[in-house]
Every structure is written in structure tokens, then in C-alpha cells.
Length: 319
Image (spheres, rainbow, N blue to C red):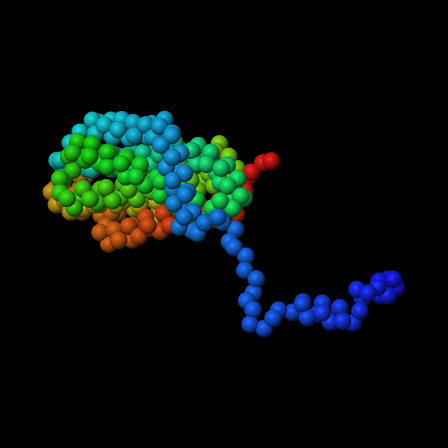
């Protein structure tokens, strides 16, 4: 220590110089480091979208399977329920339409959800590597992953609607057809985001598939088909209103039949109009239609937010 004090470096002038150099010059700006990502957010989104588009284009097995599944199921439902919606004369006709809407909205959405999960799981491994390298942010990746699904999903819904709508015999008006497509698109969107979200929340696709199946059982029971809304015990009705599938069945049923005024035969009761039967037996009323639509949008936003948070903060990478 004494040798250091006696050295030329340890002089008063040098110590004063060190103090001066340790203080910023008045008027200078703070140090600024570039962001950790190689490009701005817009460029990140475009790069992620391009990468996802290429990945989907090079995966024809998945795309062909989803379109073929939609075509086969829509044709099958159309043949089984041929012209069910053209003439409604009795209670059973309404139950047949309810079964059709229940089957198409739930099982097509569920199939789309489960078929997507392995694809999302593979891409998540790539996300871990490229995010660590500062290639893009989690938000850019999540936006691209959702956006790349939209064209395929819209084609699926349009294919389904064009096939099944005339085969069932629903009223061929632009308004009703648009409502049918609207609620099917919303249904596909929350099922797709639900599948992505479960993959992001779990360490592997097997656990994600099991979680989806368990929740689907819950959605299935309280969808309004197995037990109508008014027949569910009061203390369990929260499960109906917390069920996205129930909202879709509600919206599709009322949008197609809510204005029908022809009388139908109801065993043990006086004849009722279709609208009166929907209100008195199934609990489908016009007053809740706006709420049901808003709930669709809210659950889609919720699943998207949970997807982003899970991708950002959960890391299941094993080294």
C-alpha cells in the first residue's frame, strides 16, 4: 500500500483528474444503448409473419387435413340434417336443429383446436432460441402466430357455411347468412386461441391435449344442448354463462330461429310459435344477443392475452 502511495500515479493532481473525469460534462446526454432486438417492432412482426407463412406453406399435411376434415364433416352434417330448417312443425324439429348447431360448433372447433396443437408446440421451441438471440420479441411472435391462422380459418368457415347452410334449409337471406358466418368465425377464433394458449401454458403437447379434453367435457355438458339453460339448477347456471360454447349455440340458434313465428306442436301444451318455444323452454331471448356477442369478443381477447403472457414468462425448455 505504501509503495502505491509513493508511486507517481498516486499524486494529488492525478486524483483530481480522476474525480473530474468521473463526472459528466454539463449539457451532455446520458448513455444510450440500442434495443436488444435487431429491428423495430413492425419489422419484427413482418419477419415473424413471413416465417410463420413459410412454415404453414411447407406443412401441406396439416392444411389439407383441416380442409378435408371441414369438407367431410360439413357434408355429413348436411346429409344427416337435410332440409331440417326449411319447415318447422313440431318441437322435435327444433331439437334437431339444436343438435346440428351443437355438433357443428363444438366438434368442428374442437377438431381444429387439437389439430393445431402439435404445430404450435414445434414452433415454440424455435421461439425460445430466436428470442434469446434477440431476433424478435414475444409480442411480435404471438401476433404473427395468430395472424397466420386467420386466412386458413376464414376459408374453413366459408367452406363450411357454403356447404351446410343450403343443405339444412335455413332462410336464404343475406342477414341470416352473415350472422351464421360471423358466429362461426368467432367460434373458430376462440377455439384456435384456446389450443394455442394451452400449449403455451403446459410443458408438452400431450399435457396440453389432456387439458383441452377435460375443459371440452365441461363445455360440452353446459353448452345448452345436453341440459337447456332454464333446466340447469340455479347454483350451476354460472357454468352456462362461463361457457364459450354455450354462447355460440345461443347465438346461432337465436339468429336463425329467433324471428320465426310459425306455430309448432308441443306435446302436452298448447301450440306455440318457434320464438315462444325458444324463450320458454331453451331460454333463448333477444335481450341477451348483444351480451353473447360481446362475450365472444371478450373471450377471444382474454385467450390472446393469456397466450402472450404465457409465451413471455413461461419457459419449458430443457437443456
